Image (cartoon, rainbow, N blue to C red; front, side, top):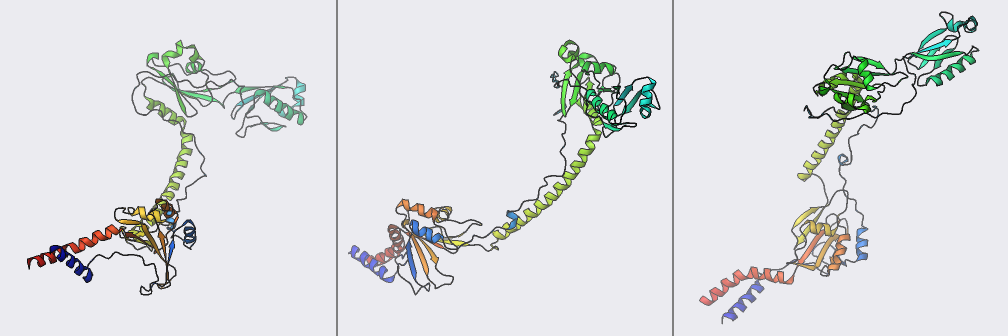
Length: 452
C-alpha cells in the first residue's frame, strides 16, 4: 500500500512538472528562440582550422605598455675612475704585498715641455752656414717642446718631435735642415726632462715631483730623492697609485727584498708613504693630484644626472598611464571582449586577453577545468553567432571529449568574442538533482497519505 502511494506521488510530481530539467543544446533549428537556424558542427582537425579562419583582431594595449623611456646612449666620454681604496676604516693586521707590473724598458720618448739641446759645430764656418739658427747665441741652443708637440727652429720652422725617441727626432731634424739647405751637422740631447714625472709625498723629507729621464727611475731612488722616509720602517707602508689601481709595499721589506729595489716607476705614478694604515691620508693626497681629472668627471656626472632626470620623468609618465588604464580596467570602464561559461562550468564571464588569442583549453582550465564528477565530457559545446545581428543564425561546435584524445582539439580551437561555452551534465547528475528536488515534496505527500 505504501509503495503504491509513493509511486502515485512520483507520478503526480512528474505531472506537475517539478522534476529537474537540465539545459541542453537543441540539434534542430529553433525559430522560437529567435536565433535563426542552428548548425551543429563536430570539432575535427579540419573544422578547427576552418573556425580559426574567422576574422578576429584582439584588442590592443595602450601605447604605454609598448613604450619605454628613451635612455641616453652617447655624447659623454667615459672616464676610468680609480678603484675604492678601502671598504671600511679598519687597521689590517698585516699589509698584503701588492706590486705594480714592471713593463718592458723602452727608449725615452720626447714629450711636451721637454727642453731639447741642439748642438752644432763651434767653428765660424758653421756659424756662417747657420746664421739664423745660431746668430743670437752660440753653438748650443735649447728648444722647448710646445703644446702641439713641435719645436720652433729659426730659418727651419716647426718640427714635430713629441712622442719620438732621440734617434727618431734626430732623423726628423736632419731632414728639416737639409730641406732648408742648412748644414745638418748637429747633436741632439734632452736638457730638461719635464714631460714625464712621478709624484711622491706623505712621510718623506719633502713632497716632490721627480722627472723620468733616460735612466729608469726606481722606487728606492725616488724615496731617496724626496729626502727619504721619515717613519720607522716597521710602521710604514708604501702605496703606489697607477692607472686607477692601488698597490702597496711594507716599508720594512724595501731594504731586505732585492726585487722591491727594482720596482720601476712610470709617468704619472703617485707614491705615498704613511705610518698608521690610514688610507684617508693617501686618498686626500691622490685627490689633490687628480683635481683636474675630477673636474671633468664632475661635469660628466652632472650631465648624466640631468639625463637621468629626463628619463625618470618619462618613466613616471608611462607608469601613470599604465596605472590609469589598470584602474579603469578594474572598474570595468574599458571596452573588452568576453566569452561566457554556462552549464556544468563555473558560471562566469571570462575576458579575452589583449594582443593575443585564447583557446578553448585555456578558458576551460583558467576557470578551474571541467568537473568530471558532474559534467558530461562528451557534450562540450561552443555557441557562436553566425552573423552580426541576432536572428541571423548560430553555429554550435560540438567537442566529444569523452575520447580524451579529442582534447587536443581544444588546445587549437580559438574562441571569439561573445562565444558561449556550454558543458552538459551527466545523466546521473540530472537524476540526482531531480531526486534532490522531488524528495522533500515526496516525503510530505507520502506522510500525508499514510496518516489519512
